Length: 256
Image (cartoon, rainbow, N blue to C red; front, top):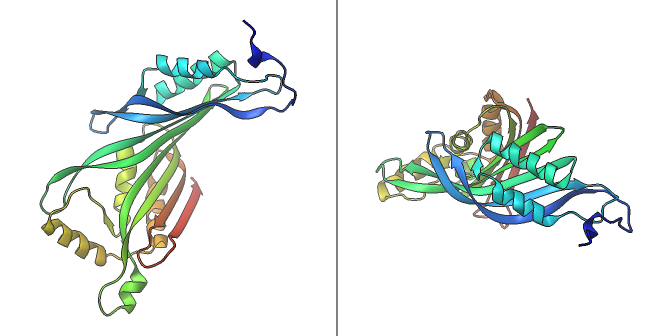
């Protein structure tokens, strides 16, 4: 049968990324305590396409994914990228795997257990057998406004905020470590399940530790700079303001 994809296009311009997007696939994520977690990921797979080819062979991306182990670690991630390169005869391949990661937390006073979910992504590209790898974690937290607390006779405005950490690293970097860095850098962590004694503790703790988004982003950045495996990071903090019709935002990007 005719291979239309390999014919010459009418416009001779190379394409940076072409492939399949938002493909849902079951994966296995390793946990820091030597356990594993089964979850479902959204997968994006791309390669570069030279100007002399009309199109890529989309089915080959899906074939490679179906033959992949599904275990998410450095070696399997790189093997999938290499397989894509070989199948498509590409110079560069790209892969992003986004998934919910569940972590068990204890309420601060009652000790009751519940699972919190965190949206994570592992992203990378392979060129000349060199892998560039990034881990991204989104962690919800609570902030109390220091200005509101200082000028108000009663109370202050508080809200949920999102800390987004993206980092490039060497070695084995755990999702749990980035979650811990984020949750200990805000006015308070947030929890899936709290009893009244826990709500009292969380509220009082947060109000005794007020922070702007600027405070939070700086605290996270200091901890990331000290991490021995991280060689680049970008941290963003977005506060879903409770008394404004807009959000507050801060970002720090650093080369180690």
